[in-house]
Length: 119
Image 1: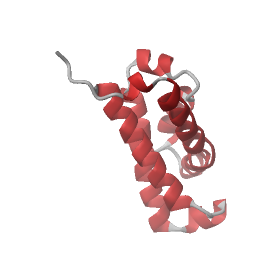
Image 2: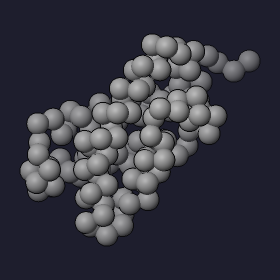
Image 3: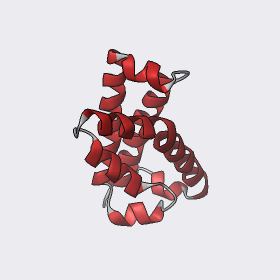
């Protein structure tokens, strides 16, 4: 049940990131204080959740770039230029790829996403 909940959090935050940044170019995104701040918050949610996902779950979902999420997490809160690059990389690369792979896994391995209570 824990894995299912964590994966749902990642999906919801990822969808929020895509919604917030749809149609924006890099300069436009980086100059938009409110959009950038909320996107940063959502990306941090994904990073924190990815770091909380057990290694066994990460191995089961091996196509997701978990090391990329760990790298982005490290860069957030660093110097401004590094943070902006990490954030833009997450927006344009990691989030779409992660959501795509989670959809594939949900179809091919639905048991990973099932909410079953522990007995």
